[in-house]
Amino acid sequence: MSRASSFSLRGRKALVVIKDERDASIVRRQFERLGIDSITWRAGAAPDVSPDVALIDDEFLPLAQPAQRTLLGRCPVIALLGTETPSRLKLVFDLDPAAFLVKPLRSAGIYAALVMAFERNERNNELKQQVVKLEQRLRSRRVVLAAVLQVMHSHALPEPAAFTLIRKAAMEQRKTIEELSAEITARGLLPRIAG
Image 1 (cartoon, helix red, strand yellow):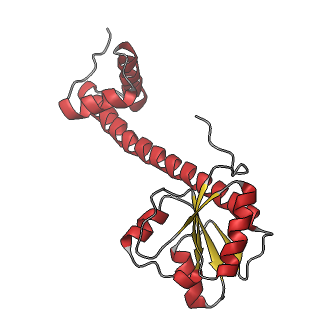
Image 2 (tube, helix red, strand yellow):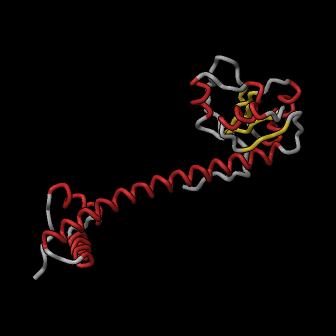
């Protein structure tokens, strides 16, 4: 499955949470040019559609309602900064923005911020998937090690020979080394030494 290009924005949906009407107008106009559908946020109401990106004005921070935070957890956030005070920046950091724009807004920079937000979000998702895979591999390594130790002790074999025995048995049974190792550690089903 190929992912959508970060540079192609047509047909995407953006949640717009902007206080100043002039800034909101600039964003809507630029979105029309880029083929992005704007979803205007209304306080207390959840949008019917899940957005692909959210533009959040720092004047609306902090987002206190859990429903607001849940909605933003699924899409990249572009923060709109009006002031650079430490307290305001901390609130912005809590959103974990993928990009930012400085107010008052101009049409220049909106496309770049959108592309950066989509690309950063995609890279973060890929990194999270890699971390999950590595954590699974780490857990399976522990199981394999436990099985190798069990085979070493039961058959009085050195470590390389015990691992080779498990590997051969896994191939014969058409299982992964991890699956067979889990069976060895859980049920004590030890592979036989050919002889």
